[in-house]
Every structure is written in C-alpha cells, then in structure tokens.
Length: 309
Ligand code: NCD
Image (cartoon, rainbow, N blue to C red; front, side, top):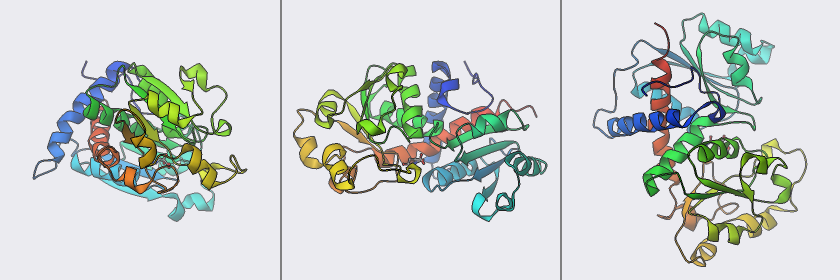
C-alpha cells in the first residue's frame, strides 16, 4: 500500500493498521533526511500550508512548522489571539478567507472537540487535527507509537500504562486507539475521578494502584494534569496526587525490571514525574519530540500526495 485510506488526519479513530505502517515507513525515511547536513527535501515545493492555532502550543506548533519547512512547503501561521476571531468571525469564514489565498492544507488546533471534522466537511482543503479539545491528538499518538517501535522494536504485544488525567486528555484517547490498533495491551491509571466511566469499552483495563501498574507494564506514559480544563477539584491536593500517581526514582528502582518512561510534554516537574526520572536514559521524552518532526513530515507528505493538483 502506498496511499493513506483517508484524505484528512482528523483522528486515529479513522485510520487502519496499514495507514499507521505506511506513516511509520515514510517517517523512517524522513528521519534519515533530517539527520543529514542538508535537512531539507523539495517534495512539497508547490504546496501551501496554514497552521491555525486557536489554543496554546509550543512543541506541536514548532514541530509542524519545521516538518512543513523541511518538505519545502510554503507556510503561513495564524494564532487566534491576534486574529479577527476576536472580532466575531466564524471558524468557516476565517478558514475560507485563508483558503481563498490558495492554501492547500490546514493544520488546526482548536479547543472544541470535533472542530477538525466539522471543518473538513465545510472547506476544500486537507485538514490535519493538531489537537481538538479533550478529544484527539492524532500526530502525538503516532509519534508516541513510533518512539515505542524505535526503542522496543515493535508496538504489538507491548504492555503500556497511561497514567494521570485520562478524562481531559486527547493524548490518552488517541494513544488508546493507536495502541489497540497495533495489538498492544493498554491499562490506564489515575484518580478514579479522572478516569472516564466508558473507558473499559475501548478495550483498556483500569488500575488505580500505580505500583501495580508499573510492575505490569513495559512502558509508562505519564500525562500532565490538565488544570486548564477543570472547573472543579478532582483530587484533594497536588501533593496527594504526586504521592499516589507521580513517578520518582525510588518507585522505579523498587521494580524488578527497567521500564520505558514517556511524556508528551509540557512536563510539570515534581508533580507527575521527578526531574531525576525525566532526565534519565530510561525516559524517551526528547526522542518523542525529535520523532515528532519526522512523523509529521510523513503525515503531511502522504496527505499532500492525495491532493488533486
Ligand atoms: C499535549 C496537548 O497539548 O494535548 N501536549 C502536546 O501536544 N505535546 C499534552 C498536554 O498539554 O499536557
């Protein structure tokens, strides 16, 4: 197979296993490219991409922009804080105005779940979801699986625990879809108040004892508590959260094996993960960031090849 089954990347939910394999094989090639002295290929010289960020982002925005530039695409950036959205313009009007300037692809982060799906049915461009509220963050899940594959050979058959604020995390949902699709075993671990009631329907198990979860897994993906999405308190205090659901050196040393530690960033050092763990060779956090560029290059390249020009 040399083509994706989709015209947009709206969520992992819409992909199949062949799509994921194709993205990874393409990313292997681009990873080699970005480690060359000249980190650029001319593949997308005729493509213009708009990055629309209606929500804060550091890593994801930079990573998409680098990926686009390394493919030689023309890039325009837009952030909601400095735009006419503040003057009352609708999302479709904003995007159609941008598209009338002959933009081929839109990478969008938006606080509303489903914003990418909505846009894809209303405008004529290829849409990449860079995070829609607490729903999906497909490129993060792809780069996470790609990083697991790089460190442990393959994703199928591996045991992964996702720890923390599962309820508000788009990283958790996209990871669950991606990991299950590739045949991994998944558990989630966190305060009961931060685990959605439907979660077991997705084929994952719940474990509320972090030590047991760590003893079971090959990989722990530590998530940040999404305070900005909370209107009420979901646990008594940050100190108590850290005591029950934070990883530290002592806890990891008490296990009889060395597990791999992941984190999508931004890290709250000393809350979900201590610095000695985050900065150790057991953690692949910066590999995830580096792989993000190659994986996003692959996604953009494969979607661009489906645009009729
Ligand atoms: C995540 C996000 O924005 O969903 N960050 C990222 O994209 N790397 C996770 C988070 O904000 O905690």
